[in-house]
Amino acid sequence: MVMSSHLKDSRRRRPAGQVRGAVALGALCLLATLACVAGVIATYYFFVRTTTGQYIDESALVEAVAIHGPAGKAATRFLDWLPTISLVVAAVVVLFVTVIRKRWRAAGIAVSACIAANIATQVLKELLPERPFRGVETLELNSLPSGHTTLAASAAAAVFLMASPRWRPFAGFAGGSFAIVSGISTVVNQWHRPADVIAAFLLVGAFAIPAGWLIIRTGNAWNVWDGFGGHWASSRWWIRLPGMISLLFAATATFLLTRYVPGQGGSGTSYFWGGISLIVVAGYLATVATTALFAFAARRRGAGRR
Image 1 (cartoon, rainbow, N blue to C red):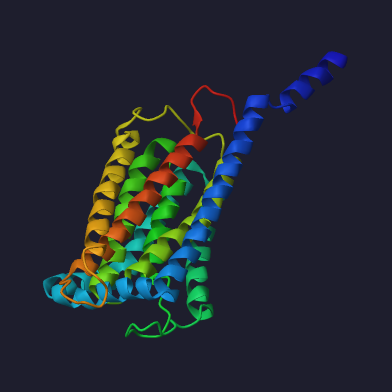
Image 2 (cartoon, rainbow, N blue to C red):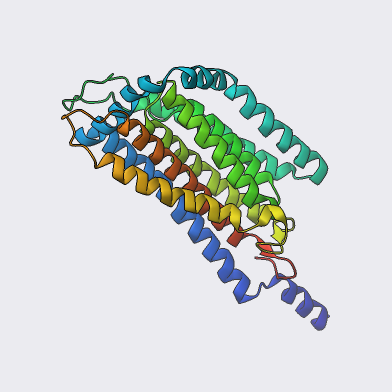
């Protein structure tokens, strides 16, 4: 009896390394979530409450007129189909994985996070005050965050969270690219300013990261992989590529947005392309950070449970 109770206690007792790993993962997810929330606040404050931010944001929107010909028509068609595309792709993938892999709990968590992000977007639009006048001619109506971008990014996040660890690097890059294109289309079509899109990315992250942590904690058995390079979908290039693209567009944004003095004109479409560059940087940095976080969260095959 003594030996039997000792064996049961040893099975219940988790190794110290596993406990530390679980605590570290929880701390990282909490920090990442808080960073997303802080990012939304900072984006709102700079681009809505300051003169410089308003000027950059509004100039990008105004300059979008210059390329609104064929690009605008394509963007309009894409945006018309965006809700359908997002919902169909997410529904098909989530249902397939749920039914085939029996991941019912994970599906419930992922879908709940997706719905919550979209509800939060509409609530923020209603609660945030109108844009104050800072000397920049602009519509006072608050448009932050972008609803279309939130829908696209949250659908991509749901697919990412439901994917097995070896598929997440590719799913992250593909989903991040889809969300970025969706956000850019709203600017080209003059529905939203760049800051609205960036805020939508961050808002989705604030819901997707804790949802992902919960999925890892409740689905530890299937969140296991061989690490980067064990499968084509888990290649390190799915992190390297968006990282390199982010650096390139960060340099582009810095050059374009510091090239002209606000109010002196002559910028052409520099603010538009600078705003687009900021969207790409924000989208792909979020992709890299989220993919890296959940790569750390997934157990290596043969290792103990966290």
